[in-house]
Image (cartoon, rainbow, N blue to C red; front, side):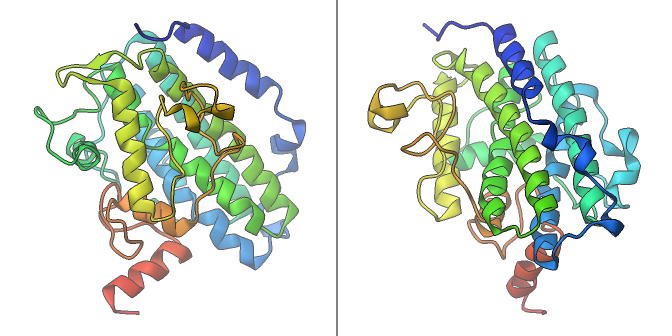
Length: 315
């Protein structure tokens, strides 16, 4: 029997969390980047996550509304190439409502970062069903039949969504101690709060169905999350920084529970990842110098491009 708490309750909790975010994280502290005192050392660290914010914005916009940034905020793309393969998902009313909220939050994130730094062009993104299917096949170590389709239904879409915000939030956790400027740290703290909330809602909605089988595979929702988390750990090459919805008792909070609606370390503190780890994961190659996955031409910005330069041998 699946864990019993309602989807609507999860969404209410999500709303309450953000009502208590400190006002310091509001737009009041933002200034135009031309007038801000952002240390040069912070710029690449703030521009790098735009690669993930673009991915999230496009995936959520297409999933809920059938169109991406080219329709809703074309000025934010900086003339970057349009994504391929995105389409409207077959979502139930609640899931569509939640994903639509996420989509417009991501537009806000793009604007927020570009208030502080100039920003980077939208990278080429592959949002096709086959792109997600490759990740799922990689997670299970074999092709699933039929191929996994993230747009087929709400559960599939939420499983596909499980792939995305968590990687971003671990990147923000990893970046925060490296930032020198107060504006930079406030920005990342505010972004981290919302990204964490999105991940919590996705995990909560999936946890409600954790023991149910995903049709037609006869594999539980929890097993999908475990396999995806294990894959990200393998690709990241930095130990265990990812956990599924149900874990061994020794991994649960204080070693007391197997339910794992929020992932954390032995102290229930969020894991952090470096840009290199994130590139290895989102490229699906395990190598920050070998592009692929959702970024067929690689990510943009100083950090990502420095590794693509090394990988190509044409620096």
